[in-house]
Image 1 (cartoon, helix red, strand yellow):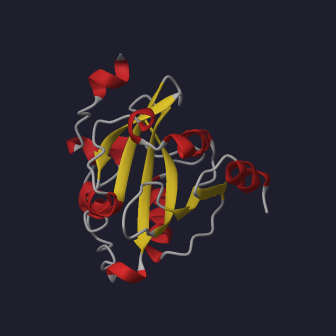
Image 2 (cartoon, one colour):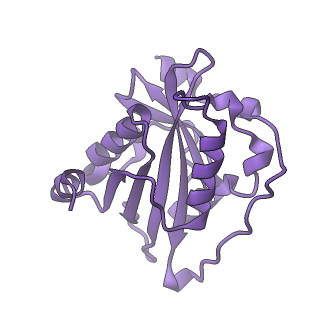
Length: 195
């Protein structure tokens, strides 16, 4: 078991994370392939490079977070509808420090900082940190994105939830020929991120 896994399990987080290229869910492997196709040599893609039409079928599973003060905290710019359905709330415009349960907050912030700084994707998996009647397991991928100046400033995440009790079915794969960009993702939380 890796040091990261052991460390965060002891901290009480209901999930694990590690840098890796290996993901179980096809949706996460698809996003990794898409992200890698946008990379410009050693540089990660910019947020504006992400084609919303290209990921439209998977957008309900996606969160885009803006880093605050280099990763001290993160604010959700975009929060997919499937996450709202699974977790029971809309986190758009909220900081991780405001909504993430206390027992797992430090581990979540550490995982997002690792994703922001690493050249290797971060895989998270475990049980939802939110109390609910039908607990679900999940696997997630976290990938860095740069701002318009090429500075790493965002994390693109996709979650795949599974629950025997909720009859979860995988979505259809995205169409490979779809194109576009993420310029329509307004920074609703920009004011709170800059304060």
